[in-house]
Image (cartoon, rainbow, N blue to C red):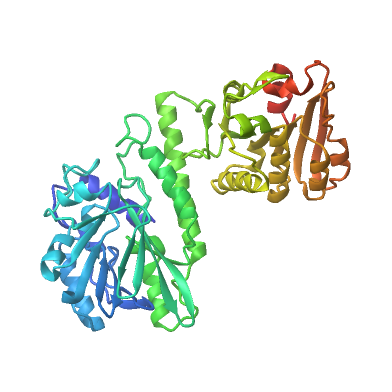
Length: 488
């Protein structure tokens, strides 16, 4: 990753260009021999500025055009492999920066191919780089018509080859990671061609952001990238995935194919996310804003801060039946929004949604998925709490049973009963039960705890407020204090 960082620093100090103009750029654009990576996928670019050919019987797809000076290399590389540039039918790109896109206009002239660009980059691309949030006044190229604007998840198909355009914004608003399946002997493998996730010097995320929503875009990108297999790992810069060494081993006959590198892919993505989080922290410190306050979300937030405390709140059954403004004839209004606000005021990032209809165990599976998303983003499990009221408590316990996480915090309000006893053998984590002594449903977790040998911690708090099941209908200090302070 260091060559890319050096390159990006030099981009800020180089003179006005529409092509390669410094020794560093020329070093990245040195001619290198082309080679078949796997199946019908070929490397046809320069030393660090990559270009990939997907060959099909009905014509070819070319991903990334490099600098203007890269075009003759691409043409010669195709000829070396036995292909003709004139047979390229579709031109794709990773993002609208001149080291990857400046050659596309010339390639379009030479081939008559259609140019497809992801939404968010189409304007900058068509204007030849002008309007880019960082480089638009310094680095530009010949304007190029865009024949089709792509959208996230859209397919690009030709001659039996099917590529998926995955929008991974931040580096540019329309930065695109491409995925496709290729044949590797008797196996089919997923190729990931990473667009970019780096943060160029001069980019701002929070205070006077380089473009509105850029911090959220980067957060989305890392969530998306972590969801891809990265089985065969490629990128817009060869140095990012160690192409030179892998190609040497491949051509020497190494097996398995050295480009099968999911471990390397995960490491690169993890490093990129760490750099992003460090910049967020620096910008917060510069602005004197400190840690972000608690907040309320209907799902896992776009920006996941591993240092925040997350609380997933699951409401009682009455909201399934009556909706957000539910009112009990016995206990009055269910103060759902006030409960969420009270939890957020205590510094939690609160995640909660109003369940519709008769929600059962599939919803618990959904909650378990939300927890996994937080953990995958680097949130320690000890900073995650499931808080469920009445039926919501049963669902919280069911989710905990799916997760098998000893450090998970679970709080249930007036929730235990026969159903929770059935969940006991699978329960893991640290569970706190709170209920009113006068609760007509007698929702003690005592029997559940007795049958849950894998629990790391279990405690029951019995309040004597005479509120019956209405205890959980309002954000009362008596249950908020123990719930938000668990474990002590």
